[in-house]
Image 1 (cartoon, rainbow, N blue to C red):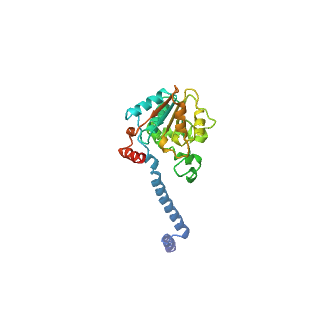
Image 2: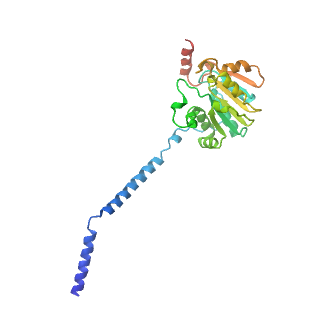
Image 3: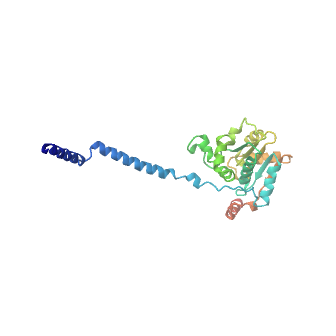
Length: 269
């Protein structure tokens, strides 16, 4: 009995000593790895909650487009009633917003199947090569204003879906060569003062039957040398029955009073 009890005590002593030994190097590594995983999981979870794009998305506007002055009202009627409309005038008059909002409204109402937004890849002192990414990513910076308008009128998720499926297309003007704008298409050419007469002719000859085309620009702010295609086209097409030419004045600026003052100072020189 004494021998058997002694054996049990030795066994218990041995077990106690074994459990009280410091953890082996491998065990330490496992604990450290587990702790790092927990920290990584916490960091990932924190980053996953950050959604910058959503934070800056414009508020969805479900109300019909309402003109802010008589000039915008006449411009909207011109786009509605004509196949081809020129919106000409200074910055801040709502040329781009009205055109983009009408395109979104037509898409929402099922009147069209596709929106095409284009502009010449001409900038004031810079070029596309300085921007990061491929051509689509470079050009995206130039149609961000229209994307904000479409996001506001249709919702950011809907716009992403339509762009992914080719129902909203944004491309440089040079990519319009060889296309035909069909009857279910709403086309917007922005910053048209930076087209050459040859580029404008190429664009205008893409127009098919019963499509809707809007051309916007300010003939006084061309970034190209020589004649610009916008001014040339207005002279050539004025008086055609299916063409409307709407001119905005300095008094029609709705962006801010400061913009009106800035334009006055630049244009009075």
